[in-house]
Length: 65
Image (cartoon, rainbow, N blue to C red; front, side, top):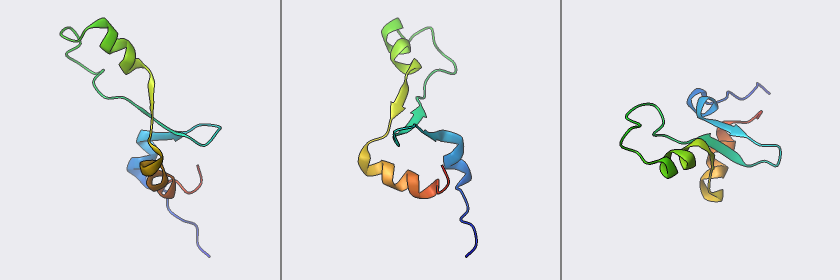
């Protein structure tokens, strides 16, 4: 049986943790940072964790992760 292909866009945006959760980088930290308050920027620094419903779809696209 041939190897499965990894979805290229998915591998760039998501990573799997050791416990199997899917994490991603939050958007909104690239530019126009002055109007955003400190509390908002601190929360955007942290990694986001996907909800279980969406997590299954992402894991299907990352077969060897």
